Length: 82
Picture 1 (cartoon, rainbow, N blue to C red):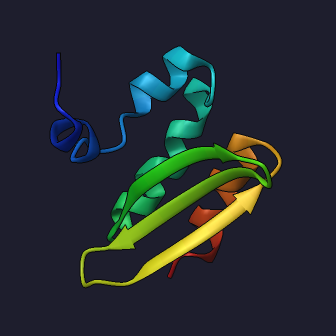
Picture 2 (picture 1 turned 30 degrees about the vertical axis):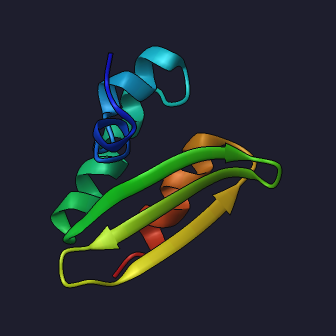
């Protein structure tokens, strides 16, 4: 069994999100686009406002996007990330 510290240090797993049904295989394009721009997905959560994605840039910047569906939140993050 993993400790709390190990669980909190895990990075976003696209295949796991597909397996859970949060994302579709076709959404991998947006994840790759974020990585190419230098962003990493820090958190991808379901909140009372909708699906919340938090991305972090390699140089230290952070951004948070919320939308009603997980794929729209991911697309919004990929398009607005510079």
